[in-house]
Image 1 (tube, rainbow, N blue to C red):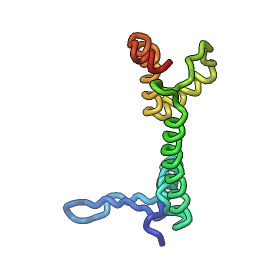
Image 2 (image 1 turned 30 degrees about the vertical axis):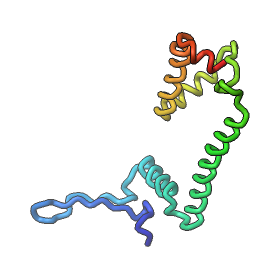
Image 3 (image 1 turned 180 degrees about the vertical axis):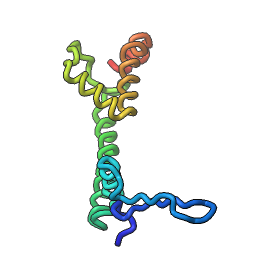
Image 4 (image 1 turned 90 degrees about the vertical axis):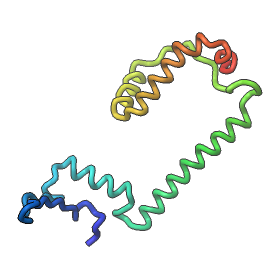
Length: 138
């Protein structure tokens, strides 16, 4: 019996005065959403498939770190001197479906939504008014 698997979870409430069990909640008592979340957390933490799951998670994490590092190196090698090296701003409007995807993503992942809002506000109100930023981005 593996203590880290959600199927073995139990929460027991005791009466503090006489030690009687007030409530005993087991995994089988959970609703479907609580079960899904518990199993998802255990999968994420590598409790289900042992070393193979942990190695896969480690490889994925190291891959993400490598992507960040090598992206920075490639950008640094290719950017024009004295400029940020971003593509020119397009005059094309965002497609309605893309705005919908951004809204759904922003609601489901609030930090992404906050990032979208900050980028929009910077692009709309800050960059057009600050000449050094305009020069650096062009």
